[in-house]
Amino acid sequence: MNTQSLLDPADSSLGFINKRDTSRPIAFFRVHDGQFLLCYDEFAFYVNRNGQRARSNWMIHWVGTPVSFKFDYPYVLAFDSQFIEVYHVETASVVQVIITGNCTSLSPNKNDVNLCVSSPSPTQPQEVLRIQHLLAQDPL
Image 1 (tube, rainbow, N blue to C red):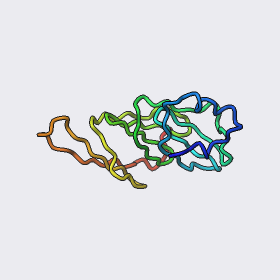
Image 2: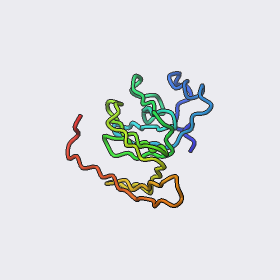
Image 3: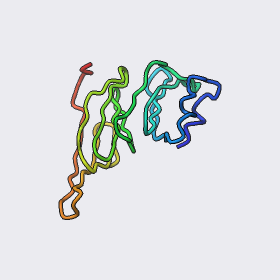
């Protein structure tokens, strides 16, 4: 994914992107008010519809190295191979870390997340799980 075309090259507050040669963009999500949540393998941040940094003091730094993401307002789920990080997108605070071990996301949809958890041993079975957003209201 090339997010560089989404970013305003004149915005000096986005300089941290150019300083990190190893950061890889993975996903972006339209949130509201013309803002987009850009998710890289090291961090996530907001930009506006003009590609300028929005919410200058807001950033998520992932604990793991996510390979995919799921957005279900007000949460973003970051899928690492060993666990799932769940963050609140307004506060950037961690809500939950779900330890899974050998986890792979299987085509998430709007209402739930399907994933496969496999054992490191080839003789052990794989499990297919579903995480469903059950909260009617935002608890935070």
